[in-house]
Length: 408
Image (cartoon, rainbow, N blue to C red; front, side, top):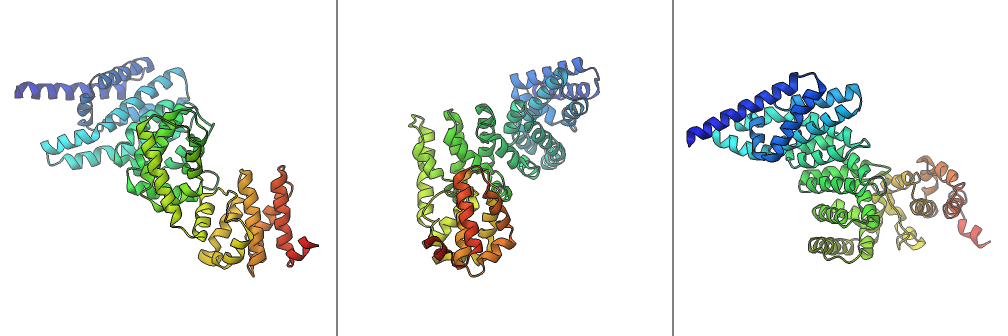
């Protein structure tokens, strides 16, 4: 039996090396496509065969090069098919790495070094290529491959480094993609949220993103999407995000609690459990915040809503608090004057006007930060409510006794 097992392993390794040589050296596209299809078939029928490829010297480059050829000759039916097969093969090979690694460690002390030297650069290259392909119109296959590849924790850092969070945010944008693509993008997010380091990276990426953020688009998608499986994967990710206070704050600020109130009843036990867990945790988080902290949470989420913190009493009481961190909140409000959301524009104009009223240096600070010029442009906005609020804000910026002006 031992001899048979050894022979089977030797034959498996030899066949894997033969396939790799053929894929790497054959120039005819149709023949190359045939071998890629056969490898994909073998790995689909028996996932255990991946170990034979992983044990070979530099087994990933032949498939990586298929993408490079595709990029240089442009997209056509032949290269599209080869790219699809290479994509699926690589995701299966990387997806089986952990099991292969554990087996190789049992067999040889060099297993750890083998894993590190074999996969680091190819995986980086593959992630970069997948990210680029996922930004294209035909992103379903590379997105499936990305989902499988991200199951390997070693893929997380190169994915984040190459702007992966921003790419996923774009795919999660409501109405921008078919729901299957949103589901797969949400699945990738869910995988990442098991990694505590990645939660910090998601927070950092969302904070830096001025126009759209991952969590913002996920909340908006949950609000509008019809397919329950998309909602389910989003709430599975939201539940994992509860481990981060910063991400909890962002979910609260983006109105996820209000969205939960509008969700249809479901019989899905997992979804019901996750929704309740998220709702309960966010309510507790919100209950512990002061009024100023609630305002901070909302502003830093990048989406403003008419609420109890947008009023004269709040600004009269808290105007001095905005001096913290070099007027971080005021800079964010000025930034939000470029938003495409009408309610955010309206509230940003109102808040900057109130800051100008109640802070001794409010008028000059808003002007120096570029807020006055932006608000003046919003006076011509097509939406009457935004234009009106911009006009009122300009009056507050230019007239010191604004209260007297309104009474007269």
